Amino acid sequence: MLSKRIIPCLDVRAGKVTKGVEFQGNVDVGDPVAMARVYYEQGADELVFYDITASNERRGIMIEVVRAVAREIFIPFTVGGGLRTLEDMRAVLLAGAEKVSIDSGAVRNPEVITQGARAFGSQCIVLSMQVKKTGARPEIPSGYEVVIDGGRLFTGKDAVAWAREGERLGAGELCINSIDRDGTNLGFEIELTRAISDRVSIPVIASGGAGEPEHLRQAFAAAGADAAIVASMVHYGNYPIPVIKRYLQEHGVEVRDGLRAERSGV
Amino acid sequence: MIAIVDYRAGNLTSVARALEHLGHECEITDHADKIRAADRVILPGVGAAGATMENLHRLGLDRVLRDDVIGTGKPFLGICIGIQILMERSEEDGARCLGVVAGEVRRFPAAVDGVPLKVPQIGWNRVHQTRAHPIFSGVADNSHFYFVNSYYPVPADPSVTIAIAQHGVTFCAAIARGSLVATQFHLEKSGAPGLRVLDNFCKLC
Image (cartoon, rainbow over all chains, first blue to last red; front, side):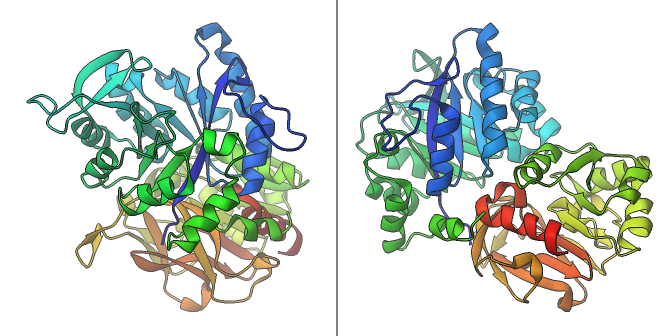
């Protein structure tokens, strides 16, 4: 039986982690490689890096970050942010990422999902979507609408329909990020995540709103998510990953025992 | 020197990086002579069975692996697609595989007892060691390893199976026979236990 995955998310701008991150100990705060190593050692099941560098010419810096992470981290990690073309994807995969996350680029050009799946395999392609609750109406039957460009542009696409379309086009996983919950620490958008996980057969990653371990339990138990993204709750040191995992284990959720991994001594 | 067989698949470099991290010299190569001369050979990668066999055949490496590597008892490690192509045939693309281990490769069922099964399985799954083997030295039984697969091997002789896992069905997750070892899970993406198994192969097999 697959265990539920906990995925810390790091926003990287020009090679530096942007959110104010406070680690205990001697970690170079803001260095994505050092932070990745901490989460790796804590037993994170996967990592995701979003490149929020605005300009194309600075994207090379992200490739260097990916290379450096890949030399030290031996769990899967995903890179997203601004990827539009097959060449964008190829560059980060060759640098050592296991998966790419595509978002606005896939809404504008859905064909890129299929191209990526054909070239690299579906397991490499994570379709990420930013979603806002805008109310049910004929074109948005679920009441949840896909937005792009950092939440500025409403697409008129129904989130559940877009998730199914993404699966059909070849996405290997779906990351559902609730804009309404993002940064609130109030918990994941359960209704939205449930609506999507009930209607697709590929893994669903819940994102946006994680503030305490109970929120992850809800995402897994009530929303049917296969994985959950965590950001501030781990970045600020309130909930180290082993603490989250212990809570989940005590509440009957199957998780990978990261401590066991450390004991094997490599 | 460890040869990583280059058959134009995606994640050869991640295996190379893991070996370098462990301090083992390796080279990604499609040269038959280099593969024959290597102390150990690793065939990693994600990909479809049909395309993998086609590429190996086009590069003339299918015979090298069968006759000059596995046939001579040179230590060989297959990872993911590298365990599947050891079998005789795969349901994927109806591919004929190397046939060095009797058996076939089957697809996970779409549903078990009416409950839909997620295929491919992507994620961490517990691996139960059914037989003691040096490759698992220092690795706790039922440790989690990272899997990405839609198909799994079904060896005809159950005694070659050294580990199993559960995804809808109980399936063979690792095999060993003499100096031949193969895992369905990704050693290079499975954190400390994965690195430990990789290190064991380099030191003990």
